Image (cartoon, rainbow, N blue to C red; front, side, top):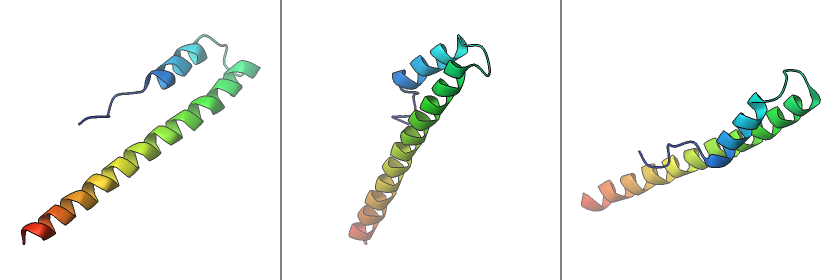
Length: 64
């Protein structure tokens, strides 16, 4: 499946997050940033999946 790889920005944030001490100010800050990036990434994947489904349904209807 194309597009199932983890984006570089998310990996970069995770590496930075791993370097912080848990419950520190920066740890909390980067956790929020990471959550935002993951949310937008998963939404993009959902939209892509819905578009593929719609295209497939339209293709099947055209064949009938």
